Length: 138
Length: 289
Image (tube, rainbow over all chains, first blue to last red; front, side, top):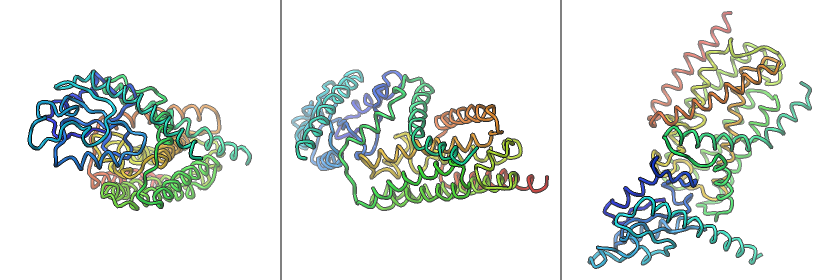
């Protein structure tokens, strides 16, 4: 799933480029979905501000465990060039826990795919941990 | 075929059905990707997806929804088992509608407007293709004097030629039933043309996985209905039927990729126009000849 916080659209276009024939992220079985309830990986582009803070939080909470957050672009990682703006809180990690950081302005599609595939590894680890917790509680 | 052969056929459907359906879904995604000049996922991707959904946390707005989706899966299996078990075609159609109703109820049970819009659209689409399927059963009765699938198969005559009109109408209805573009109003396979996720908006984890498995069963059963048109009492009929069913599947993928979504008005109108002209026309021909 992809959510545009306050991105300038540069990273968003690169995220969409990952789905095109040239990069084809579906090779790894990844599909761009609009539904948080069926999503595993949450791609966020752009820094977080006061207005979309709640939206990002809510989308994150709606995703079932195990889930992974990938911050795409330098703004999502740290706030980037907008860091000191009065309305910007900073990177996505100010609001929700981030697992993978993909820097760049705009992040290259190759870097985004690399981040997503790294995210898949984190997802697998989280799944195993969840399984162990389940077995432990029995 | 003796009675126990039909029971074996029904059991084979219940066991092998989802495997074939999963393979069909994988082929669908691969061919779609190749049509868009992409490499596409591995053929087994739908299986990986379902396994992943089974392991995920279950988040549901209410308990009723999961119950309804389970009923949808159960009755889809029952429908297929009845069909492959050589039972009454009318019974098959009614259980098919019942399973559909459970899915719509599941979508209606959540408060999400997106899934409610999806459910509403699913009802419109169901209204569009139901006449086609009913007319198909009527034509079978007129030709073979029985609604039972076993009687139709054992008659040893190919239904394709006398039921040509209804066959074409069924092919048209297949696009709606498989929820392919341009009639994927309620639940699209493609994220880019859906309001969030249509009917499945509130489905997650196990519930979503059972929805997928039900779709696998459904595709196999619908293609089975396609094969029924070609059975002539020998193996050539079976082979011809399977070849045509596979070609129909590829045609559906092509249509899916070639068209944008249409409004429900178009779906309803075209469903009824095609159904009435070809279906009723076929009934008239069978009555006159």
